[in-house]
Amino acid sequence: MLFSQVHLNFLRKNYSFLQGEVIFVPLKAGLINDTWLLELSDFSKYILQRVSPIFPPEVNIDIARLTDFLKVKKINTISILPTDDGSYYIQGTKGIFRILSWCSGRSAQAEDLKGAAAHLGSFHRTLEDFTYKFRQHRDIHNTSKYLQLKNKALAHNRQHPVFSRVEKLVERITERLERGGVPEKYNHVCGVVHGDPKPDNFLITGAGPILIDLDTAGRHSYFGEIGDFLRSWCRRGDTFEREAAAEFFKFYLPVGPEGIKHLLPIIHLSCETIALELSLRFAIDTLEEKYFKWDKEAYDYAWQHNLQRAEKEFAFAQSVIKERDYLKKLVTNS
Image (cartoon, rainbow, N blue to C red; front, side, top):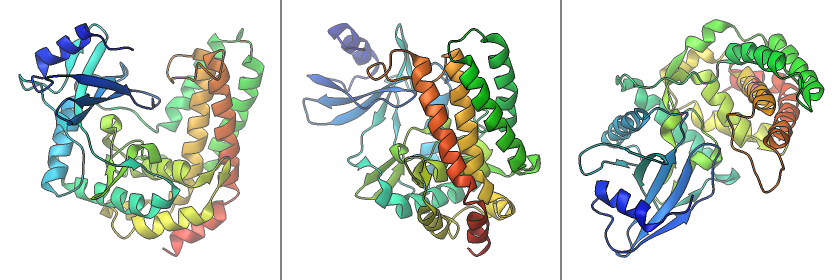
C-alpha cells in the first residue's frame, strides 16, 4: 500500500500531531499486520499499522489497557496513541489503522535469549494481577481444534494439485500429536500471555527487552506460550538447540508466574506440540489459502510457500521429539 496526500489528510483529521512533512517508510512485513515508520519534520517518529481483519477493532482497546497496566508496574512496553477524540484506532476504506509509540532498538537475535526469557517471565508474573476482561478472545494453541479443521480442509480440497502430498503430511502430524498425549487439563493452567513470543516480537532497547505486536495477548495457556518461545528461539534451521532450551528455563522459571509450577510435569512436551500444531496449520492453509501471508517474490502461489513452511516445521518437530527425554530431565532439575 502506497501512501498519498489523501491518506495523509485522513490520518491528520484524527491525529493532529501529524503536522508538517511526514515520511512513510514500509517496515519488514510480518505474517499479519502491515507496518510503516512515520518520520515527521520535527524528527519525531511513530509506528503506523494497518490491523489485519482477523482482529476485531476492540483489540486496540485491550492493548491500551494492557500497556497502561504494564507501565504502572514499571515493565517496559510500547504505547498505543489515542486519536484526538480518544479512540485507539480509526476506520478507513483500506481497513483499521492505529499509531503506536516508536522505541529506538533492534529486533532480538539468538544472543538475546537470556534477557528475553527473563522479560517473558516477568511479563507473565506481573500480569497475574491484571484483572481486566479482554474484549477479544482468540482461540490460540487449541490443538484439538486444528485436528478437527484438518478434516474439513481435506474433505473439501481433494482436487488441489498437492492434495496427496498434504494428506500424507497431515497423517504424520496427527499420529505424532496423538502419541504425545498432553492431558486436556493442562490447557486450563492459564494466565495473561503475549501469544506469539518469537524473536521478531522482542525489541531490544537500551532499557531492556520490550514485547511488541500485542494483538495476540490475552488469557491463554502457559503451555502454548512456552512452547512457542522454545519453537522460535531454540532452533537453527530445522534443528532443535538443547543448550538454548536450557538457558530459557534457567532464566524464565525463577521469575515466571506462580501458576507455572502446575505445568512442570508436562512442559517438556510444549515445544514439540506447538511445532506440530503450526505445521498442521500451514498444511491446512496450503489447501485453503486464506490465513497466512506469503512471499509473492519467492513463490508463484500461496500454497507453495505454505507447503514449504508446513514441511519445514514438521522436520523441526521431529528434531524436538528426539530431545524429549533430555527436556524432561532438564525441567525436573531446574
